[in-house]
Image (cartoon, rainbow, N blue to C red; front, side):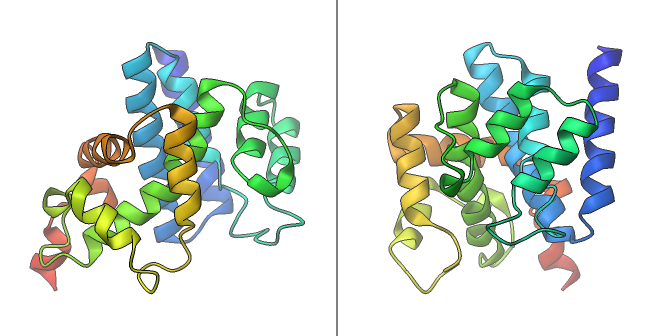
Length: 196
């Protein structure tokens, strides 16, 4: 267990070294929460899946171009001793890298990445700015509104659930529940609305 804590701590330090943006850090935490929940559900390595979720965009703030992200990040991860399995999963989450998603972990990262961002956006427009107010049905409805959270690729959310072999609404509901577990860390527990 101690090794897992140290791995998580190391991944968090790497993320915060490269990512100053609070919203990008929160996105990493949201994807990590979804990845951990899916790992628990399937009996996979929760620490490994969580680390991949936490680190998938760690280089994005410094290297946001398609030529650099996630390539530069994977070079950094290799230098710092992260496994091929971790690097490959991170490469596979970006469609344009050409790295095919093969493992369950790779498919899950892709399926959770855009969705976690979209769920966050849905929570932030609720009166209480809380995940407790977000339902899968309302998320699906918001997906049809192209003006809402327009930077989120809806087709990736749909494709992700297909690759996991899950009904889209079931996948959305699962990720909402996973994110509720860390709602306070994400600033989506209703406290933001109270202090506003």
